[in-house]
Length: 173
Image: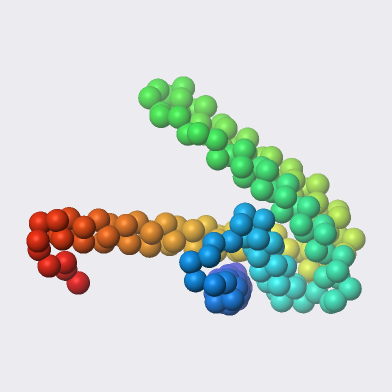
């Protein structure tokens, strides 16, 4: 059942992102604010579909969810601090504990917002909220990894083509 929900969330989010990218002129990148708004809109649309929110619930849900996402972004930003090279067992322990502390802070944010979401959502919707949110997070991470792999592949291909041209060799297809 969770796999089915994840598949639906992933497909709908990718479709929304693809639709938004089609509207964007070629070669023009979104500003960080535009990208944030686009991501929030896609997430709200997914939440609306998965939780079956009414129009009234959606209107009340959006500002709370936006604040929630801002807080979660702050927590994830803290967790992305530089990862020091692990040379000793003490370094490893410190890094693992910092990771657990970051997860604990994320859970605290979730605990803080659940009562606020409970004022807008039905009990069934509230129970579904965190699993849908987790599925979206997983999908976003997977998409970022894929974009990173694609970018590396394109850069490698361009580099190989430059090297081939410099050597006078026809590029491989």
